[in-house]
Length: 271
Image (cartoon, rainbow, N blue to C red; front, side, top):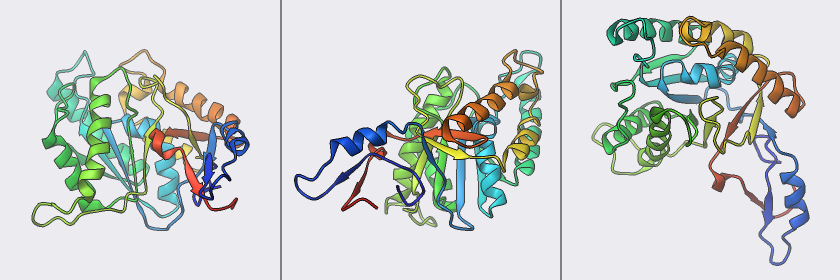
C-alpha cells in the first residue's frame, strides 16, 4: 500500500527476494482504489484540450478536493469553439467562455484560457513552453490531463504537450522571472469516452462528496445538457461513476490511468 493509499505491484530490493506471487496478487486487484495524498492547500492543475473536457471527466474529483481545501486550476488550451454547428466559431467561443467561468465557479476552481484554436492545437515546442510556464507559476502537486489515445487530435496533442511540459517546467533553464517547479507528484489521465483505446482505470478515487458539485458545474455547458450533441454526456458519466464505484467498493468513483512506468513501487519490506 503506497503513501496515497494505492496498492501497486512492488519489488523488494533485497537480492533474490522478489516475490512473483505478491505481484500477481497485486495485479489481481485491478482496478486500484486510491486517493490523492491529503496535504491541505495543495494545488491541482487540470489541463484540457477544450473547455468542458476536464470538468466532465475529472470534475467530481476536483470538486471533492476543493471541498477538502485544495486549490483547483483549470487550463483550457482551446475553447472548443468549433463544436456547435448552429453557431459561428466566434459566437460559440463567447458562449463557451461564459460556460467555463460558471462551471469553474460551481466547483470552486480558477480558470485559465489558452491562446489556441479548436482543432488546431499545435503539438510543438511553443505550446510546451506555454504550459510549462503555467506549471512554474501555479506550482501544482498533481496534474490531470487527457489519455494518450483518442478520437480527437487535440486530446492527443494535449497529452503530449502536458507530459513534456511537466518535465520542462522542472528544468533549471527557466526564462527570466520563472523558477523551476519540481513538485509535481504525479500526472493522472482522465477517463473520456472519446479516449478509450488502451485506457486502464488504474487509480479509482471515491468522489461521492464531489458529484453534486460536478453535476452543477458540468451542466453549465450546453453540450453536456444535450443541446448540441446526441451523445448523452450527463447520463454516461453518472453511470460511469456508479460502475467504477461498484468495482472499487465505494458508492461513486472516478478513475484515472498513469504512465506504465509509474505502475510499480519498490519496498525494502512489506509495509
